Amino acid sequence: MAKKLDAKPVVAAPLQKPTALVDKADRPDMDAFETAMRRAAHKKGFSVSFDYSEDAELEVTHFWKEEQCTIILLAVKELLDGNFAHKLV
Image (cartoon, rainbow, N blue to C red; front, side, top):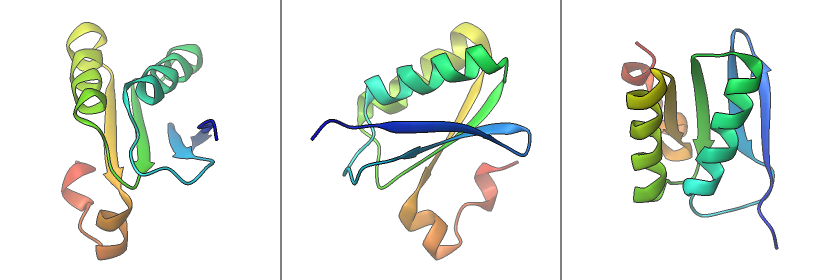
């Protein structure tokens, strides 16, 4: 099954969430989200997934270094545990 991702503006920042059940978001997922952020001219976005591959995390770091745009990676477990406020600052 192919992965599909949604990028919709929420409040003032885009939110990416998987539309299909996937274990980890990977680099192509982050690339697609970066493109959506560029098109919408947003500097900050949020991605929600069960987990993230190392390549996805590296791509987010690269996006910051190259374009000073932030993608905050939120794992579902963090949201359920309520352990994510430190990432929102």
